[in-house]
Image: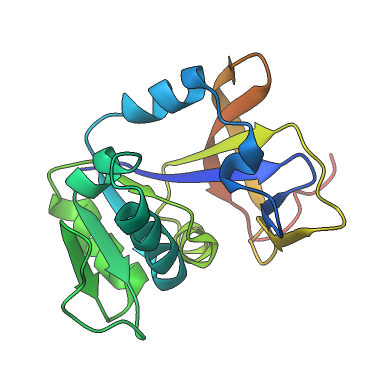
Length: 187
């Protein structure tokens, strides 16, 4: 059974995007980018917004996203229509949770989200996520930040299973998540 990992990048104050800032807040370094390129072969899961952004970037700078372009991608959307122009991309117009539940039964590769905060939120809430991996970038974007990463998430207990520092400044934290019905009772 393939694993499902939600990959999140965030500013220190929890934003996934900040107006006027470049991708990765301009702080991606060679160690982090090399780690991204060396990830296991997986199928990327995306929502429509992330698909539009990433496929546009891939069209503008194909060499920078060659790895992601080459790998299989599944986009969950009720607003996109086939044919999708980004190579190796399949469109699923139905229920993302149901489709991912089926993929977890017999898909040949691990599954990972790319961006797609709402998709990750839905999959975590449905109890389908095996790993939650957060890379924290050392910036605070309180004035320009948008897309708070964890807004709308259920309560989740996290067991840390890995951590790493990239390029002397980025922190990767990897957890096994357990969705809770509410706050744990005090002993």
